[in-house]
Amino acid sequence: MPAFTRSELADLNVFVAVARRRSFRQAAIELGLTTSALSHSIKNLETRLGVKLLNRTSRSVVPTAAGSALADKLERGFQAIGDALGELDVYRGVPAGRLRINVPRDASRLLVGPVLPDFFATYPDVQLEITVEDRLVDIVADGYDAGIRYGGTVPQDMVAVALTRPLRWVVVGSPDYLSRHGRPSQPTDLLRHACVRMRIGDNSLYKWELGGGNEACEIDVPGPMSVNETETSVQAAIDGVGLAYCLERRVSEELKAGKLEVVLAEWAAVGVPFFVYYPSRRQMPPGLRQLIDSIRAANLP
Image 1 (spheres, rainbow, N blue to C red):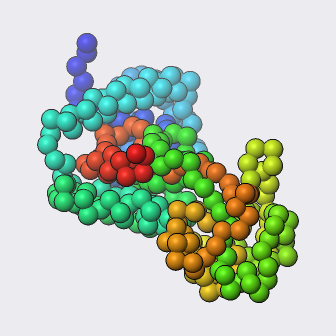
Image 2: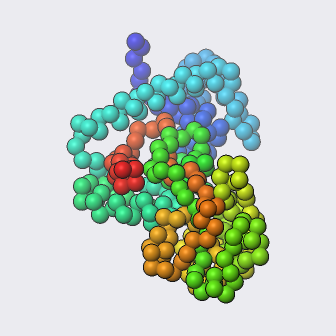
Image 3: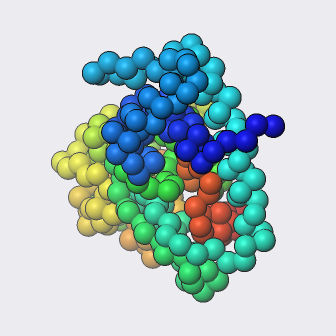
């Protein structure tokens, strides 16, 4: 087996990142290097190998045929290295270091927050940085180690691990609102109600998904207001502004307290679980495996 110098391995890692991201700028962010340093590494690698690996223009970076073949094999090799290093966690003792994650508000409230006391009691040397936002982000380009999203929105080139069972979505309203406006009995009745509309991560207005199987439908509900996060939507429903659409788990306490009631219960929709996701070409950062295990233990009994 040939031996590789440190610089050769570094250049190969740079090439894999650039080939995967199709961008020197994004690869530079991922690796924490400058674009000029990456360009220098690629030039050295191509000179050493005697093969052109990337076709570069002012607007794009595309691997050549030789580059694509090499990148594919290197990806599998670096993945194997990452897996082997990750398996050393069982011998390392407690994790230590910084872990940066990006999560939507519902996931922060329902999944991450509840496990933090026990997590930090068990792993006091992990420094956890949590950014809570509902917009879709590129976790690699923005410098995060991992993120949490609904399964259907996880990028395909990521490792994804389910954190929950499939999620149940319901329409809710306050007793006061329902006494004044009546209770809808079928999805089309929502078109005659005031609804709190939800603007999702790509800034589009979300159509409420109801039912399942052959009876599944989407309703572009009307309403006096739209919001981009659940907290305001739920509070507006409690205050009688209109009906809201949300995770049933998110309003479990409000339902128990009688502040909200589920309507169209037979039309509740079951959606994809929450997933944690992270780049597949990196060694798992300190504490991530333990945080995933903590969340799964609390949500997947």
